Amino acid sequence: MSTFSILELNQLQDNQVSGQVATQIQSVSEKKTKNGKPYLEVTFVDSSSSFSLKIWDNSPDFDTFASASIGQFIGLDADWSKGDYGIEAKNLSLYTINDEDKQAFLQSDPETTSIQEQAWQDINELAQSIQDPRFNLLCQTLLTKHADSFRRAAAARRNHHARRGGLIEHVSQMMRAADALCLVYPTWNRDLLLTGTLFHDIGKLWENNYPKDSLTQTRKIEGELMGHIPLGTEFVNHLWKEIQTEHADVFNSIEQPNTHEAKLHLLHLILSHHGQFDYGSPVTPKTPEAWALHYIDNIDAKHEMSCLTYAEAGQITEQIYDRRFPLSEQVKPLGKVDG
Image (cartoon, rainbow, N blue to C red; front, top):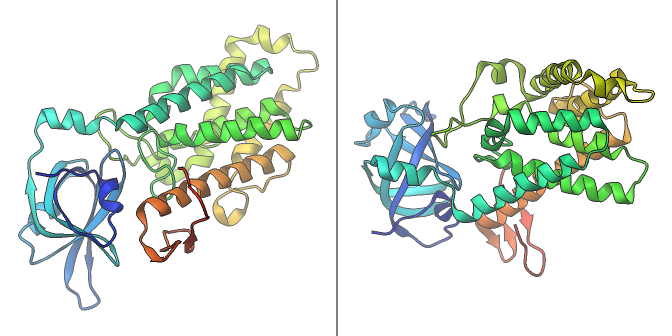
């Protein structure tokens, strides 16, 4: 019996394959067609990717999925193909995932594990290179006290780095880009920009995180009612107060400290990193470092989405790939494109 990851199913083109895929249920939504026919839209996840299936009311599995729990482990056995609306499953049957297989399921594939280990190492090395003792302490406190939660969080629910550990991949790439650009623009405050990059999405520890024993993102009321930008600023204010109290000697030893202003500039980077009001930023960027962070964030997100398009979207014609939300059609450049 052949087994597949969800990413491998997403990469199907015109061919059909038969086999099993182990999954967890991310969400179950009850919907109706234009004619009022009920159906379920069920989203499944594993460590590699996600996909959705429509389960019609006349399916023998309709009641099973209607009563399923979010995060439930479930095996799918089917004839798999790629249609106009994504993955399709014919002759679908379900199988039980035992405890031993659950533990294997929760482990990332070796390539993803290696990428995320390197990402965590890069984040720590760049944070240690920050010269301003206030920003350095802030970063080290985060990376020490909140490491487990940080390393499990995703950068998004859908569009980019939407996987367990995706946030540290996103942040490490952004920090490397910010560090490189500071060599081109030496007037930028490198310490501020690196710290802002590390903390810009820190609210996603509450908005887009995973339990220790699951690949299904949880939803918390803090994330739903506040969003990651206000959560991030609240967290920084709390952490800043904590380290300023515990390390008063460090703060008092700085000549011309301007500590309040330093914190304000950091908060501004978090508040403005979406770039405009329509995208959720309560203020727009007003400093070179804030503009830099906004564009670095956008570049890395678009790069990830482009790589996913090449990996998962079907081709409309030679070298032109179908639209993958939120991008338009994607044209593949000449030569190799690495993710």
